[in-house]
Image (cartoon, rainbow, N blue to C red; front, side, top):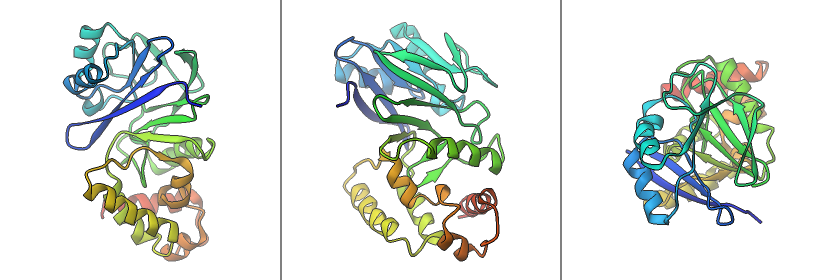
Length: 255
């Protein structure tokens, strides 16, 4: 039974923020602050007081509202120690660090590739991970500050989590990701079924996030570089997993 409550809210054109709340302690954390007004409005809607802000990486759509939120709420801001250019951090963390929020462990995963400073936050007692722009529903982040090997290693950290883990990512890219996934894994019946569900949800204006790691392992081509059907479709039966991943990422960039 989960001890914490989760409230996901949209901002900008396709971003998601998440509030994490404990009724027992009154603490509330937010994942990123790309839009300060949207975050503060979400807090007001729920009637929660922000105590903590967990920053995944330095891109503006994740930190542009940080100063406003910190000034308004006096929250404690946690973010990347390595390669960080983020102003206003009160606590800097790195791979392997663990800290406490509302009596729950928060484990820090450094997942570079999209950016060099990217952090993901895993709450093992809750079975929840916040993947920022590393792992998306049916996708992964573009390689702005890392190469394919770097991102593949980062994704492997996430793939090692329990399959039941709930995955909160930071963007509503799922329908476009599904269209691409069908081009590299066209005979995957689980993917075909998920694609139909995604189209229906989006037609109804509903979010496709969060997902589960089990769903991603079964249908997300960026986690399936070892799949023989994908390898055969790409003509890469003898390639390494990292090479197959790199080819899928390149194809997505040009899709």
